[in-house]
Amino acid sequence: MQFKNMGEILDFAMEKEKEAVEFYRFLSKKKSLSGSKEMFADFAREEQKHFDMLSKIKSGQTDKAVSEYRFKWIPDIKRSNYVVETAYQKGMGYNEILMLAMKREEKALALYNNLLKKAETDAAKKVFKILCQEEAKHKLALETLYDDYMAKMGD
Image (spheres, rainbow, N blue to C red):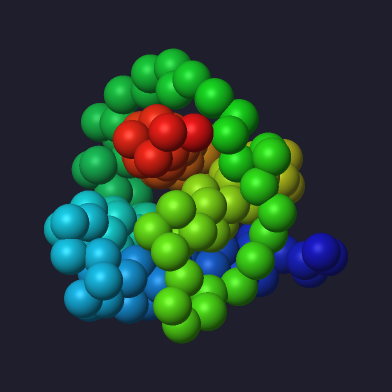
């Protein structure tokens, strides 16, 4: 991807966050995922916060949440590295939906790591670092759910 300026980078990232919000809201409304509805709704709310953070940075504002953010190490169990990218299809099993979601989070993490390298200001760099960590948290949560689910299924 080639971007002409930070505004284009932020627009692109905001569009990806908007897609993530819609994806997790969609999953939170699926009757077949009744046990995970709240988790997917939480992910949708977190992705909305990411969108809002990017929007504030784009408008030149700093966010209190950004200045007070505390980083911590998020392990990468790399489960999504072994998952083939796929698109949502009606009737997907829970394990397939988790694989789809964790692959999306893996891609989001890679995107923010890439955008971090292109960031021009310290504020933008911090936002992209925060977003890297947040996506890593989502990825770990989904990979852990997947592992737990597959263990219950005898895999």
